[in-house]
Length: 442
Length: 148
Image (cartoon, rainbow over all chains, first blue to last red):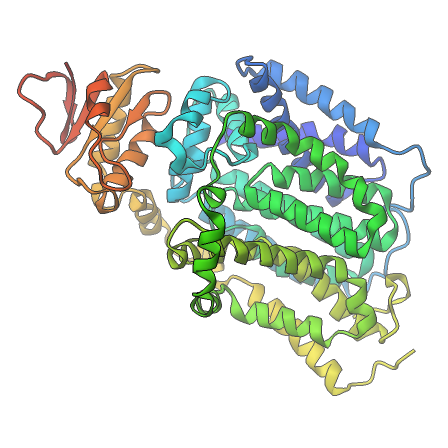
């Protein structure tokens, strides 16, 4: 366990200077949460750079390149004066005792999750047949193994998927001096904690400690992805934090938040193909909602571009777009009723989704309009997921049963945060209380 | 500014908020703190391999110990159909034998690929009798690692 914890501490350490170079006002939970996420992303990128130049991975090399990459973050920082940051005005303190109680439940959830994620060597089929398999192969090779990725016998391992999570496992193996899947679940726990730190910092800027604590608690179980060892935990963390940061940029006219959002979404796109779809969903939503921020997504394109080019160059197949996509789409379209029924029946946490949708509908128009960016991102991403079922080359009902519960969880965190904040702030502030600083306490 | 008096809409909003919070808490997960985790740990440890546990993973560990990185190994197991167990055996072997070239003898469409058997330097037979002329490199946990 100690090598894994050391590796996670190293990811945090790499991320701290990177976060501060990007956003000098980041402090406390925001700094810790973002630092871990950036550390994970920077180490991935450093290992990718070494792989591109066919240089075998070693810890000193990774550390050097990670440090240089962190330094480049400063170049992303605008010369313009910084907007009010963590030290700026916040909603009042309110009943702290209740907030502490809520935090205790969140902490218990995370501790429970840590026990769950480390019960045994990682057991999920998708870990040892996809994520862990590729990581182990790359670890043996000390870099991307193109023979493995290009083999027709290995397409089951989704060889086209981006490599952030696999490289993070490899970094842990390098620190530990060998492959050991016994404690790799701690990476999932670290992603969950990092995301909740970001959620708390975002929520606390707009709401009282009690409401912010409730929003954080509401995200805790989702942040701790039950699919331990898969890329879901990382995608939920990077994607959730990224969407919330872009929202903060729009709502608060905050340049630093946009920088965070763009990078985090780039790293989300480096976790899974669904992260690439999320980046596209964010771009489309920005086009409709806040076009002036659209081009500010460019760092995310820089982050994901090398892998997209590599996989195109090596002709790594993506199952959804193989063969006659149009014919599959038309065939499945005839089965749309059964597909929709299947999606409805297998929706995970239906009560939560009903409450979230009802909450959105109940909100006054002004509050709903304020959150239209996140609502639009969620709607577009859901549409992408449903479209993927319509073009799947697999049996569509098998595909739904093996993925829908995972996919819907990708979207829960940003949706939950905005609905909880909007409902709570409206309840305590009146219908025209569009700005947090004007709100009273719950 | 609208007052904060109770209206049906506000009551509904409060109810939604309450349901979101209550429905978000994973009560089954919290239970893990208060139970004896020994049995759970054992169940999870064998869940990847179910009926093949512990012999098949231990056999693959033995194969890994007696082969080198870059070696090619064909996998021979009792199931001859992809979805009847061959897929598991092949994927699992790919994980334990990372660094080697693991070759299947059955395709996802249940076609037999004898070329892979001929091409492989080694063949890992588990609960299947190898050809009489095969040279046994190592045996254990219900299987044999053979070469020509």
